[in-house]
Amino acid sequence: MKTLILTLISVSLVNNVVLSQFLGLCPFLGVSKQTKTALSMGGAVIFVITIASAVTHVLYRLLVLLHVEYLETVTFILIIAALVQLVELFLKKYSTALYNALGVYLPLITTNCAVLGVALTNVQNHYNFITSVVAGFGTALGFTISITILAGIRERIADNDIPHVLQGSPIVLITAGLMAIAFIGFSGLI
Image 1 (cartoon, rainbow, N blue to C red):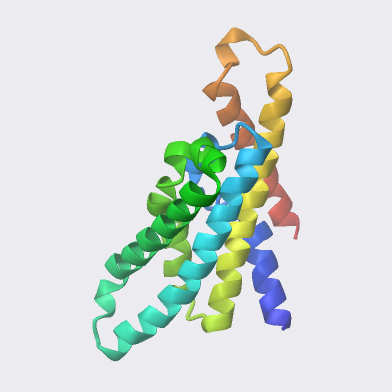
Image 2 (cartoon, one colour; image 1 turned 90 degrees about the horizontal axis):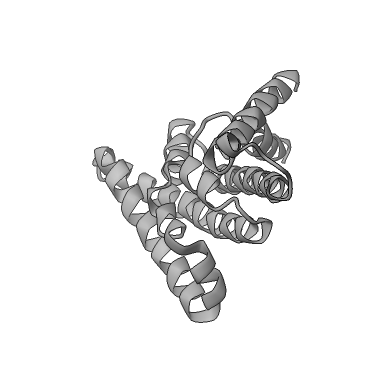
């Protein structure tokens, strides 16, 4: 149990996928305009990464048994794409407003390198099934925390007078960079 808690803290806070590994930046920067949308994207990412971690763990064991583990990347991408399609269909049917708010960034979860990165990291670290799922959930939780914080900052920035040169993407990139620098400094203290 201690190992699982340490894994959860490590992947969500210390080795945050966005702020220390710089994976998943596309949805991180694109969907972080409002906290509601950021939380929704975070929920979708939590679902996809957690389920993908479980399924890819089992699938990788099967690939090893068949001696075709060189197919892991292709197989993992197919699993991730299928899971994202399920999320997209669910949101389109049951939450059209959220589906429209996430827009193009929902299908981008498929190409989100963080999702594939977690699956590959789980394999490389030889995690067992439970640890893979916890690592997947923790990584997605860290993503959700990061995107929500950035969205909160962006909402506050929108209400302030920002020099014209810094409006839009420049201030977001500066803010994200400062978050990463602060985060790396914080994780060095732990």
